[in-house]
Image (cartoon, rainbow, N blue to C red):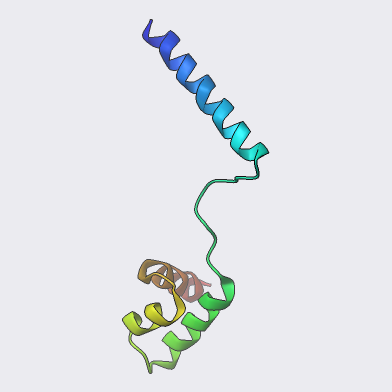
Length: 75
């Protein structure tokens, strides 16, 4: 019985996702604005602003900024 209920839940979830896609909804996390990200990286490397100020100015989260810095330094 439990497996039957699980199958029904999975089926309803898939139907809901497909109907949302039909209405134009994609789902998932929103993408970061690349221009704001590049501005944040430029400000960070200028060493004139704190990370808190950069995040407030550009709207980029602290974790996103640090992740991008890590990616750029490993390249």
